[in-house]
Image 1 (cartoon, helix red, strand yellow):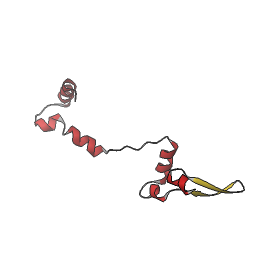
Image 2 (tube, one colour):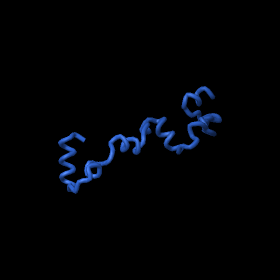
Image 3 (cartoon, helix red, strand yellow):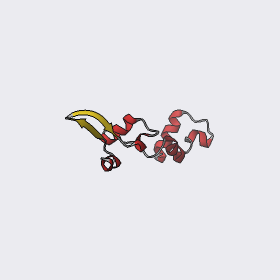
Image 4 (cartoon, one colour):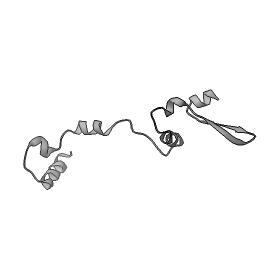
Length: 85
């Protein structure tokens, strides 16, 4: 049973066909919401590997702030479209 749990699958222990207990890996549940772990194992959830901060850090500040101009929002959007940003 431990090999099955190590592979990431929970084990349901039954008594004559009646579920009595559920055996799960503790390491997967530490620091993580158990519901997220179950959804990820079942398939409908896939957690991301990066964070929002990492994505924003790569993009840098918006053009209006980095260039220090007094451009309006429409001008900023048009400039972003032209540069493909």
